[in-house]
Length: 342
Image (cartoon, rainbow, N blue to C red; front, side, top):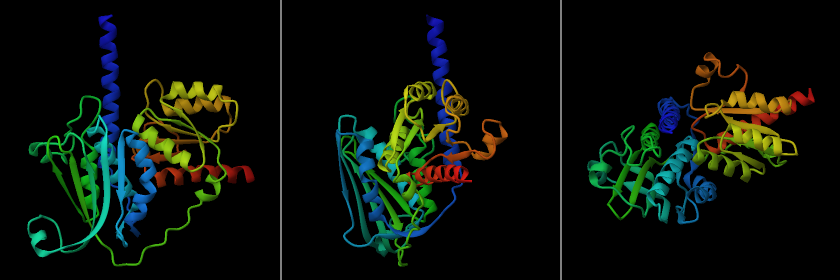
């Protein structure tokens, strides 16, 4: 019995190390920017329902928009990543419930303010404020929250890369992030991003609109419960029916018990019990031609070189944003349509 417990601890440690490695690779990846001018208000509005589901019913969510335009020039997916990371942190700080407030404001930073805050510039900025009514932090902890690998969460609950990633994104976009907190009185993050005086870039209408409107069934296999919840929310809101599996073994069982068609398998590559590649092989044996979209925190080159995936497969690198998920699904379904038409 004692040996069995030690064996379970070894397995858990190995799984934890794998999760940490994936997040470290995601943190260190040089992201490709697709900057355009957009209104921060529109991103907050579109993400509201997802944020509410992510935090749960015990947390009240208030999203306050700027009365006028709040335009910045950035990659919208970066703002989505910031919001998701800060939302998860706020949720974990309010285990007994509470209030999460997200607000966008446009403000003019004057000489006096800039002089007292390093790395900030004068002029118009969009201020994104994320506040929670949670446990709060002392000043020593506040001073370290953006350090990679620093975390106040218990074992198995945090790697210390979430806020470090947020910090990197903000700096990459020419902005500044400040944190205010007090033990027992919650935490507030303020992100300052330079306003853009350019006209708003009209985003190209994505091709997913046509295909996603047709609906379909997607089997999602992801062992990270937080990411799986986000994926299911995004995909369901796009008009699909989701079959949700917490791992490969459950995915196999659910696929076998599902009488109707499955239009796509969306699976993580590295999971306990078996790899995403092996899962795909098992499902395509019973469902020939089943399209597969793989996800991983590893770069696509390293996966190909180590033989985990074959070249030419559909691949989505983590971390993912809602737009990236839908775009990748659209590409896979579009490829399937082309093959069937040809």
